[in-house]
Length: 321
Image (cartoon, rainbow, N blue to C red):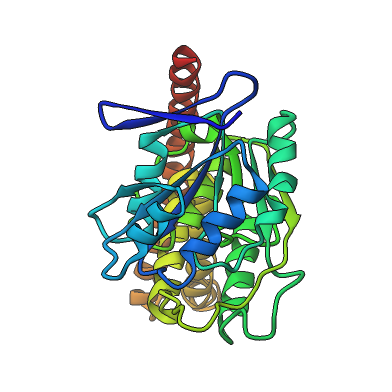
């Protein structure tokens, strides 16, 4: 049975009578060249799903083409993928969701493969990983390197073994919608989704999907250095916020090592001559040791507060169910 859409108070609800509701969420900015095919492909792959196209300040015919192909079109005036994802999670009600880019680089015939673990309750989010199978021109030269750098940092900080942090092809359930706040405005939103899910201990799985090349007439909106810097800055801020003991512990260790190095000459001089000719180094070493202790203490306090906030968040989420 095909889903029916009902709208109320600016929120869209997907209604089905015989199974879990599925919503396909497609963020778009000037994707007129591909959006029609993407909508048709996902309608064929998931005939029971409701397809939503979120038009983000497009200046071409993206919205009209999407509507002509049967998608529900919702306009998001704040330009940036993060704002679109926030609008998606805020305005669409469903049991499970598929989020996919509108550039026709992700295969619709893999949608059920992503959905299966979520529908079975084995995962809260399934990420379609692109790095195992992709075309020669699917990525810009530095994108794979940047993805690996960010992946390595996240895997080290959170103790996981993810392979693709920046994939835009994901399936997830209501747990993600209820628990993950979106505050990013741009392409760093995928990093934010992943880190928030890890922080709240949601179940993440990955499944390889082929990653295609943009067809002729479709242009990437990514800016390699600008968006890469924004992703790294987001990672830095989220690591500091979610892993304060690790973050400030590393800072404390670095300050301690610098303090020891600065303190060696004054201590050596005092041990051999009874004088401290390198007095500025002695002051520097003392200051670094004080900062090291302060950083460690701050990390412990913030870790305790963080844990209490997480407990409160879990209780509030449980009460909403």
